[in-house]
Image (cartoon, rainbow, N blue to C red; front, side, top):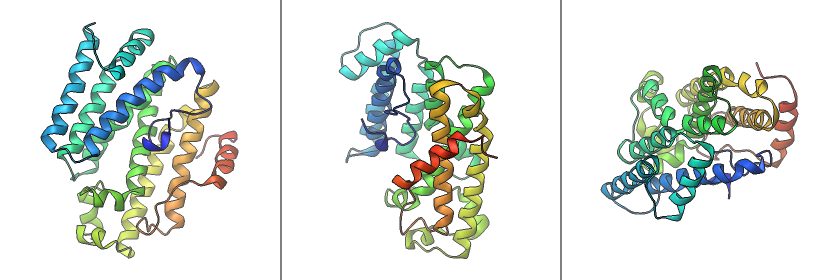
Length: 272
């Protein structure tokens, strides 16, 4: 199972304990397939929403202790029972996927963070649950890391999202820096665009760093997993900066040479 198909989900890591692979894979399969319903194929919006509503109904059946038929939900029900997995984070994911069907612009940064709260933060909450970490501070810092990862993914994929008819850059920020939608369509990277992206990169970095202490506070494999995730996100931001914020010509991403750097940074004290 490749993590590349759902970038905010840390599945398939060699650091993941064997005992947690079954529940993580079950959650991943649920999230990946629901996301594909919202994003892939040529179904109409109504068909996509109906399919996502069926997913929500299956979660209701699991919660009620009723039988489910598809292999995906049978497996998920088994993992929910075995690990006392909360269903609300999964419902939050479905809410975000439904929003993807009907919402293609975000007026404010607050609106975008609300989307991240449901599209990304549930992943962190479920992972912490599996590791038995449930204190309020850890959850807040996990939310910051997950939302930052989602924002970083958006900044990577401006051109890809444009082709899907979506803009995740807040409209208030476009107006503030004098960047119009037509400029995104032209893939025009000028001083105004660079100023906008510098602002967004700095904001995503600050959010990531606000959650980063969690990765250095947690012990064992989850701590190392989180350290690498945090460093990976920060490295992508560096890649965007090194490209002079031109995310149109080449999507900033991590290469093989980056992994040694991430490991070295994970061995050091937390970033500041």
